[in-house]
Image 1 (cartoon, rainbow, N blue to C red):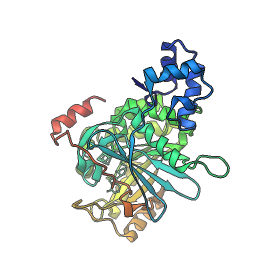
Image 2: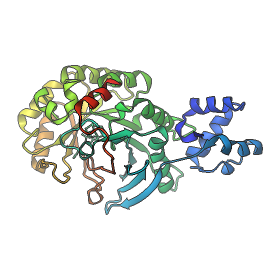
Image 3: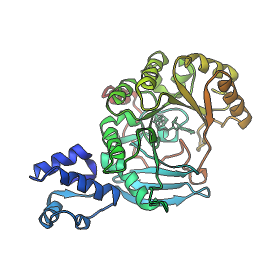
Image 4: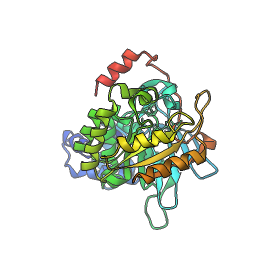
Length: 362
Ligand code: SAH
Ligand code: SF4
């Protein structure tokens, strides 16, 4: 049984060809699925009756199951989606004056064990399928709907939820192609952002294949500290990561990349760290997004005081870089960056050889 939410336009064209149908059927069905949120073939009134009767025998429309919806005092919403027994992932909608952003998950947990991340603490179970990734946008659009002008409330997507998108490369790219497709969600490449901890070969693949906006989780200005905070740095150190960032900024849809930098009190927030950052990124077109650390139980870290964050940002701006500070949103419902935990049956058992094997797949 083919789940049609697993297919992008080329996939659907191939599927309909295998049924002896014309390629334009794929575009029609794509619109029903993603623009009208159809979950039943009988709603697809412009398909021939015979095709509508045949489809349920060979195909299904199966989004992830919606388990729970929470709404924060500041309007942030979080949906918990079931993706198999005892596995749940989270997706978050963040309303702002000029845009509405959906933060999407790509894996059940994450294998990369960044020291300050709640998802990393959960361990790793598996990659999400295309239907489970795009299903988050599918559900959120159903819930949020359109504004009075008829535009969708969700105008931006960031792949910054649970998991490392570039370690689930194929499914992430197929889901992104649906986000960009005019017959599906029609978002611009500049309004879809992939956030990565720095999987260098996959960054180069993405640049060539599906160049959307890129955010790189830097968090430290030197290898000694980054090895501790973002362990993938041991595989792709700064000397390899920085040239890859430069290449992406040159060819990407925006002429810069964003560096995310979580502000950890007394760890990576001193003036010498800002100085080192300016030196490290001197020939990369980039902006900095400082993220006040969001605490979770037993994290072992504290958030930098806001004066420290301000001073750090001023120092970066004094060095000629743009630096913004991310507003904390939705922390009353544990929906802020790094707080997404869902529910993960950890299969990685924290054996680094498994993690090595997993990373070797890229
Ligand atoms: N795996 C990808 C995307 C998901 S994490 C990545 O690491 O980029 C999204 C962002 O949240 C990353 O920049 C991550 O470093 C940051 N983050 C993780 N834990 C956090 C926490 N406790 N407080 C603030 N930001 C956090
Ligand atoms: Fe994984 Fe990103 Fe969390 Fe690191 S910060 S553990 S890469 S989700």
